[in-house]
Length: 261
Image 1 (cartoon, rainbow, N blue to C red):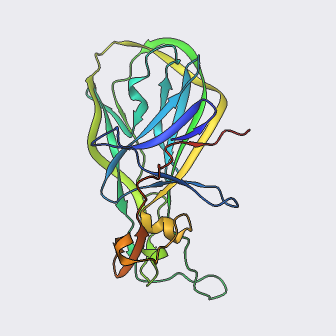
Image 2: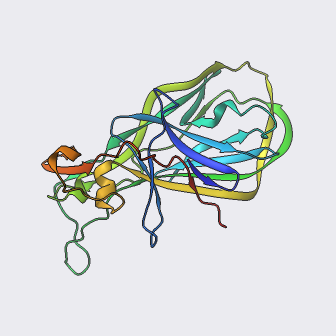
Image 3: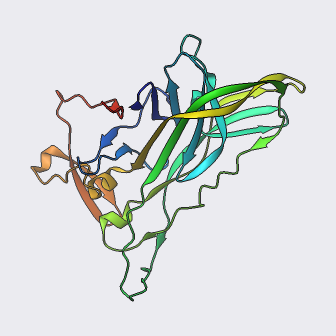
């Protein structure tokens, strides 16, 4: 998990929420945090707050807000059931939380030119997940809304990946809407719920995501060129990348702490 102080965020598989996506951290000069993901896999964003008070949390994927907020209960009480987050909808009194899905970006056959007429090779697309934690300020009881649909647009701010003979340009992956559901329940008309507003910001956690070849292209993972019996293949179109297998005695890091010392 990516953690800052008493708050954390991680990505988990929709088909098995005990399975977390591997995490990596960039070089010292650019300590960006990355989730290593796979195309065509659905996922949820898991958030937690280990505090003695309720937290108000907003989420964005690929630069666009998911359109709702989450209230995390105080640590002394049972964790909020909506800690696994994706696309939230409420229609006809039925509340659902659907998964997000990783998919490849589109490939363009041209390269854009800048003002000087020189071809601009676009930056490698890497998606971004962001969770912002605030104090939750209760406003009192109010009737429950019966209709809500997220306006999150999975194609809103994602450019095409240029179709050139470069691993860096072929590994694009983005998020779209999935089909798996973690919550499905009926809301009765007239039900009263506690309403909240956000108070002061407590923490901002963000991390990028991309596929294994993207991590290699970004310099996060090293391209391995050792003996053939000591690597696995990762293929993207015509490119083949050799990735060194982890030794059995190595234990992968499962927590990245952003807390300043």
